[in-house]
Image (cartoon, rainbow, N blue to C red; front, side):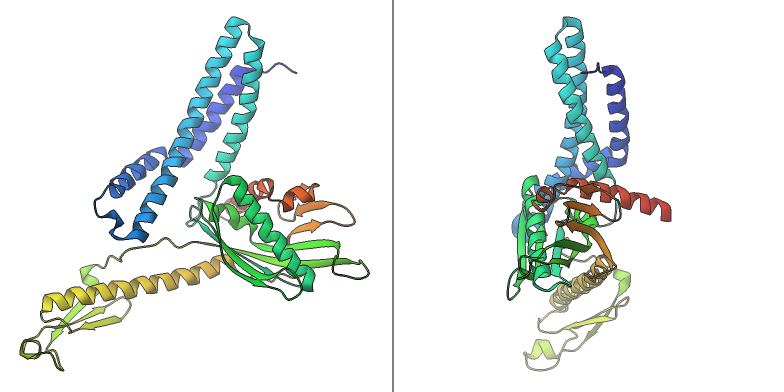
Length: 371
């Protein structure tokens, strides 16, 4: 084994870590952790379970990011100490241990560097992945099921929880479509490079004559919307009108200006409330309803934006982004990055990190060209 220049390697590790640390905004991470910790400790946190789950989950994610950076810093320091002791004591076993740790640290820093490239507005979100069979008949349906297994196996290897939301089975074999969630930080940013048309070439197990068949499946990846407990509405955005309630309800309801109408000026949404006896009660009730309607409106807008992000994936000839060739040779190749692997079985068993990493780097380069 060639002698390693440990001082030079350690300097390179520290330089790479410093650039990652700068992009990761450590101070921002610490601020987020402090703010989220304070919210998580609030006495009434679990009065709204959905919001509580969001706060605790985000706290866990941000704390993990900070811990990962601190852990890598400590590992570099520990390796430098190990090398110094090994040289001073003439200990070849410790130098071999340091060489293995050097290799591991390079891999860890490369992985973290890829994460720093996930800087899109939704990249840190969890992901919703949809797969649908395209051209190719029963082979395409079988291919869709193969891709579902590939992605769930990938998630399992990483310890990411997966929840299958919907499956539509084909008549003969495989799937017409499937939708599942990947519940992990940066799942959307990571998996979004998998969106597009995937192409399979193989000897069809469904063809009596064993002929070669080409089939397609489409993968769509969208970000999971973060739950919001309410919408902040500036006072200047609301027009408040009061009027006399009508209909049955007793003398106090019908003879005072207790009814309230709220108009949200930017959207034109109008809410009227007159069921309560006092103007204060009606105004509070109207505000709750207005917030709910604006939240629903916001979600509808985000749904439209998610569809725009996902794009139109046709799952047919001419727009494939990756080919899985099982015959006459064995090769999986990404047509955007030219990254390829000869072990097709391992890829279909979920070992797709190389494709994802190269896809993320390729996308970052494309963004840099267009900006």
